[in-house]
Length: 460
Image (tube, rainbow, N blue to C red):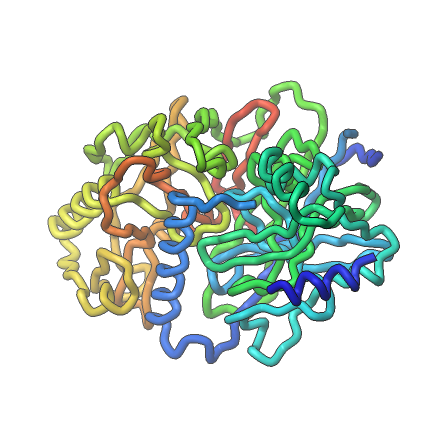
């Protein structure tokens, strides 16, 4: 690892726009041979959702003028969404996974970028990387630069800067649910079509594990894309997951720093953000977007869920967050089991004679799974999420059930780790992107509220 940082050191040498910036969210597919069956594909997504949920629940210590931007946003076959951003002088364009549960922006960096266990799009392919020596605006962030504390915190930065012997911001190491990345901090120029943002803090990663693309953190931290751009709001519309579809389609991401009068977006239903718990040694809880999920109903029947799971406690246990980087919604055991029991009971009482498919459950890691009569023929109980302020989210069936194989089996697209909540156990519900397909969701930061409305998300 030290060799990578030494090599990096030898290689590195007011924006105004009246309208939102719209960026496409683009699709990146794994090779067709990555999974030998759709069961393995789903099992991989289940495992990645659970791993990410564990990291979110138990995080390790990780190190204006008006404008709006809109960009494409597309689903990865492995469960995430990405967009393209341009940095440097002249600009270099790279792909970034959009992540609302983290607050750091970084890209693969230098010609010697190393990624362990990465497939992009094949093990022998070279991962696109930012080359600092080709950009006249690249500068290493100094140890005394206040932005260094955005990564390491003031106390840790002071300790490391006093001992490292360098005049640069200490290297970072970030742990994600699906992998890790490490590098040094750069000050660079972020460029949109007619917009230039100088002195943007970004991570120049020289090595990663299972992170072939950069990450654009949109969380509440000071180093996030949202914070550095001073956004009043941002929104995205997620194209539906098509894990076996190689068509080039996309949703979109809208970045808006315009002045705000509290006006609601037409057709949007809003619920206020809930105050984040402050937990010592777990600063990541302050980065998440907490929502006030009040109850869940299945087929019109209220599911009895203990209150401690729905409201975040002072120790960090419980509550609901929304996360663009999680594929399948996670529910802790105390939430998942009563929801699952009610769903199974209603399916068994229906006239469809649906029987459980234990084989599919074992193969995919999802449950419950039912034998059905082909895609579109099954009738499933309605799943509704009731949020604070009377905001009810009625999920389309395709957003909470997924068909397996040829369509004779359908599984609930929600995961649990089967563990009961303990002290400081993190959020009980992590609302994933699979449940947000073909919804436009809005993070209204100026008014501290979350909005959503169902609509087609294909970008034109």
